[in-house]
Amino acid sequence: HAAAQRSLAVLYVAGDGVRRDDKEAVEWYKRAANGGDALAQVEMGVRYATGHGVPKNDDVALRWEELAAAQGNGEALRYLGLRFEEGHGVPVDAAKAVSYFLQAAEAGDAIGMCELGEMYAAGKGVARSDRDAYRWFFTSVVAGTRKCEPAQRAAGTRLPKPEREAAERDAAAWAARF
Image (cartoon, rainbow, N blue to C red; front, side):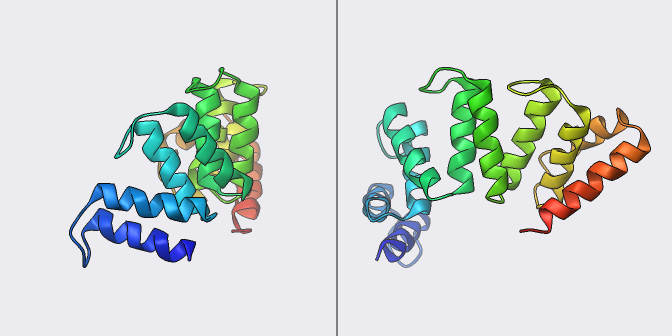
């Protein structure tokens, strides 16, 4: 029933077949999230993190994100990575952020791949590596996000052609898994 409850929440958000009602949407998202729906748990985490339709509360947001992440949800894993990178409701921990971004990437989250590339490019939580940064930027683009195209191009200019081509092969092989 949790997926159906989440679907009903989406209808209330959009006003599709029902009057648009964010308060009602939150109630249905909460029911779905309590029923174990990872997508609804992510939505509740986002809502508590931003204060959208609920009081802003980083502790509650973190709890919802952790529940969704425990189910392997890539978006939730990425949000946890961002929390630890930026210190939202948790102490800054770049190594933990990298771990969450890697898990998000392994779950197929293209933006998580991009975030991981940014960590390699900056040397945050990992040794700085243009090759690894380029590989993750390229992988994120192959996986469907354009967010990292400028960073991919910039990182690519810092690599010799054979290294760039090897990174592209690695990225294509990685992205083919999804």
